[in-house]
Structure formats: C-alpha cells, structure tokens
Length: 194
Length: 194
Image (cartoon, rainbow over all chains, first blue to last red; front, top):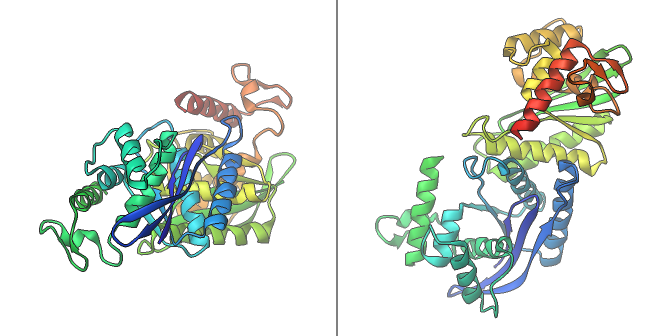
C-alpha cells in the first residue's frame, strides 16, 4: 500500500510518500516540501500547492492520502491558511477517487513514537528509524508528512481501530500494538473534542 | 463587471452572481445554495462543492470572485470546514486566472447596509432593495453571497479603498460614500486583527 502524507501549510507544506508491506514494514518513496511566497495572493498560493500536489499524485499514484486534521484551536494566526491547504489536498485526492485519512497530530505522534505528546525531534528521530533513513528528515514539515503517511499505513485496514479500545484487541485484526492503542485513545479523545 | 460571490460552508454554501454598471447600479444574475450531506466524508463534500462552483463559473463567466474571509475565531465547531470551502472557492477562481476578493462579514454588512454590525434580516432586506428583488433572498446564505458580490462590485477599482481612510477622499476615485468609509474602516480593523 502506498500512502501520500500531507502536512498542510501555506508557507511550507510537507509531502511524504511511503510504501507499506505486511508486518508493519514501511519504506520511503519520496519526501519534500512545497513552499509558496507569502507575498503572493492567497488564492495564487493555494493554486501553487494544488498544482504541486497534482504532480506528486501523478508521479507516485498512491492508494490513499493522509492529511493532518486541522482544529481551529491550533494556532489562531495561521489556522485559516492551514485549513485551506488541507482542504485543497483533500480535494485533490477526492478528484482522483482516492480515500482520505484525517489524523490529528496527537494520533500521528502516538503512532510513530508511542506517545501522543512527543516533541518534534522525537517524531523526526522515530521517522528516521522506522524508514531506515541515514538522517532525520528536514524540515519538520517533511518529517511530519512522512509520520502522517506511516500513521495511516499502520492503521488496521477495513475495521475501525476503535473496536479494540479498552480490550486491547482489534475486532478484525488481532491485538493492537501499544502504539495503536495510544493512537486509538488519541482518536477517541479527538472525536470527543469534536 | 460580473462578480460571483461565495458564502462558504460545507452544509450550505451560498452562491450569488451580480452584474454591476456605472453609478453603483447592480442587478441579479443568479443566486442559489450548494448543499452537501453531512453523512458524506469531508473530502467528498469538498469535491461536491468544487464541482458545483465549476458549473457556476462555466455558466456565468464572472470577472471576479468574492469570498468571505474566514477567521479562526468565528465559530470553533465548523470553522475548519468553512475555511476549507473558502479555499476550494479561491482555488476554483485561481485555476481560471480570476481575481479573488476576500471580504469580512463586517465589511460586507457595512457595504450593503452602511453598518458593520447589521443583523441578518437587515442584510437580506438591503440586498432585496439594492437588486430590486420582489422578496428577500432565502436562505441567509444566498443573501450573504449576493451581499459579498455587491460589496466587491462597489469596491473602488484599481486603488485600495484604504487610500481614502481618514480623509473621506479616495486616492483615485473621488469621495468615498459613507458605506465605503465604513467598509474601509472595517477592512482596516480586520487587517489589524489579521
């Protein structure tokens, strides 16, 4: 399964593609950052991101797109632009009929580090180890995009991971790993926040 | 000049098209609301809005697109979806090379009623009068989309309306009307918040 992860942002939008195989093996396909100049009108910046994402989708033909779930509370100054870029990424996927997974930062951190409040450096470190890279992905937006893709790839397919919460057992896919349990709790908390 | 106004929303997205002529004369071309079912995945809803806006743009070939400027503070529960629909509308315009005007609700209310804190009913009433309609546009999202288009059409072309703030005189377009002055103050306030 190939997943394209998007860490949305107008100034820097992280994009990362990973392939996953059975046994939680994942490998890097490509990672990068789409940048747009703050001096351009916002609609032109959105267009630049949309065109760049189209080239990534053309080049890698993923099976799914994972996008960070944006909450209004996150950062008042830039959240509108971030939400708009997330929307542009979701739209790009939907235009190709690709499924979209929305994951909160807490879910993503829990998936790759086992701890939902992990620091930026811990995420970068774990992404490097999980994908067997020789250096931490830079900048943080690139690492976050890869972490999103890994988080989505590791999500039990078909069944909601929430089925296993409280029992430690996934409904259709056997026991949850500790990271998956943390991820499920984070997702459940995010849903309660609504 | 033909302006397509978009009052963004996932559940109801208002769309209104007006033609403007010299002397602040404006006329209705078409108004409506794009609805998407809350039960659909968000990326599918964004795609439905994008496809609908494309048909509006094809049908009316506007010179500009006016979109409500979304602030994170507006409404925590739905602001992410609202911002994403605004982004989708801005992207649709940018793909056609159309200029996009972003206007705050305060600016729009000031433009059509002369008062930035006007109630929803006052906006509907003034939109009806300005466009010479026989009834108030329903629902409020449709009226808001028309108000956005009127607000944009009445904006002095070429020069920033801010040039006239404090003096009551526009740099290139003569005296500002009271509504334009209120609009300019609202815009200036919005930029300070921005």
